[in-house]
Structures are given as C-alpha cells and as structure tokens.
Length: 189
Image (tube, rainbow, N blue to C red):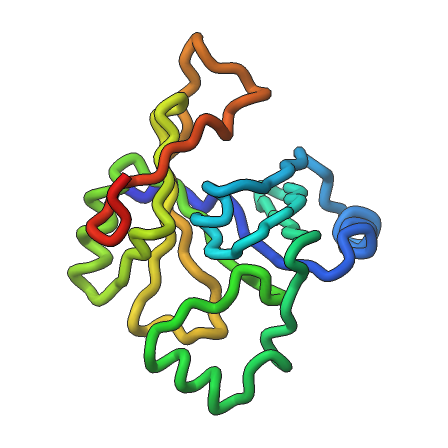
C-alpha cells in the first residue's frame, strides 16, 4: 500500500472564534498554521463556487484537525439541509456531501503513489472525482477526492494527496501555487 499516513481531519465550523476557543482552551490543541483559500482551483477542488475559506490547522498528540470556516458562500447545516429520505437517496446515488456542510467533512491521507491508490480504490468500488484533481508542479504534488459505494452521503469524503516536495525555486509563502488542474476526460486543460 502506498498510503503513508493520515494528514488531517477536516471539520466545517459555523463560528471560527468559538471553535478555536473550544479546541485550544477546552481540549488543549495548539494552532499550527492558518491558510486563506479562494479562487478557481480551490473552487474546483472543493466544488463550491464563490469560495472564500479560512482554514486553521490545530494539533494535539500527533492528531491534526483542520477547522474550515466558509466566509463565502457560508456553511450549510446538512442535518436540516436535506431530509432523511434525501440523505438516503444521496447515499444510494453516491452523491458527495457538501464540503461546507457543518461537521466532519473529510479525512486527508498522504500517499506516495496517488495513481496506484486511485486504481486500487476504483477496483473495489471507489469513485474518483476527477473533476476535483489539482496538480501543483511547483511542489510535484497532487490532491483529489474519492467516494466509495459503501460511504454514505453523511460520512466524510476521502482526500488523497501526495506530499509536497519543495524545490529551490519555491518558498513557503507560495507553497499552494501555482496550482494546475489535472486534465481529465470531462475537463481537458
């Protein structure tokens, strides 16, 4: 298996300040770093048009939690957004849960063989969301979301990503760009 380790657990939150206070003061997490996310490539990866997101990474005992606060278009409360029947139908149709739905959004796993893992997951019924794949040539890294037949719509998505490899031409300040969409049959670049 090429999957190396869990990178982080993503949680969509309604109130970032309140969530930070809970996780840091209440549970003893420490803030690792923050990330401002917007633009075409982020909208494509997360499948949310008009995206303006602040992500805060917290860590405790080797576990990383990513708090996702969607300033635009805001969050949805998936428990009230869809009825139980709608959620059941979405699960049967393998429809992804919106990334800006409150609560657990995704598990992020790091792999050193993204294409091999994607092939293996597809062979056992996984569905690669090719339209979400982003390649970052500056860091020789890629990221893509995967769904599986056995994953209900109210469970998190699976984010597979390769570890970024920093080269001498890049710096920490631009480690998330330039990002290039991955060509796919439905979205040639």
